[in-house]
Image 1 (cartoon, rainbow, N blue to C red):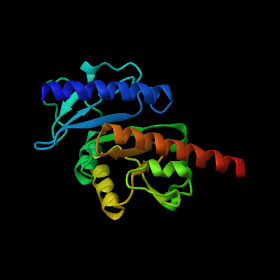
Image 2: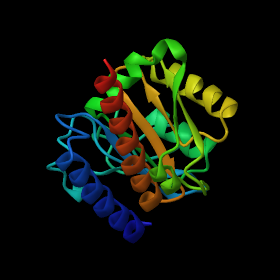
Image 3: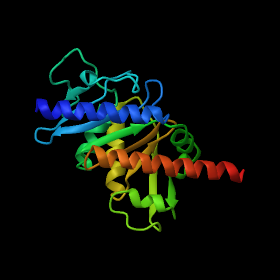
Image 4: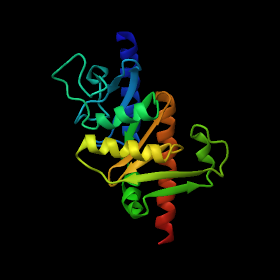
Length: 208
């Protein structure tokens, strides 16, 4: 596991740095994880309160399926690790990524009363796994944010069960969660969805 963990840790650091450069995980916002082993479930995850633009591989933490650190008991993983664990299970995801861009934060509040937002007609939708045409209609659910992570994880699981085709969801005033079969696919999903959210946001602003 150690070699695999080291490789994944380096990939998470590289991905986090790229997201930081794009303004998607500024300050201490955002968190990233990837599955190291499936049985038993072990995730590599970014630490709590870390600058994602200045991460080092030795800061990445290995956790079990209950969010407990596996090797260093003093290490503190992201407070949102219950969400990562639940999504990894519910979607059989190989990686779970949370960005905190201006556009995802703004739109998650603007469309909250609608329960979500629809994106359709854009060629970039074809970058999402399984999508073959720009005519695809992507529904992004929007959930109320909470500091009660176990309860929020249960709510996320309920929503994922109700929306089996969704590629992500928004937390109100908090940003985007998405995932993929591996880290490369999850990263692509962040790029696609953040592009589409910015496009939608700019279109809405232009219409006011």
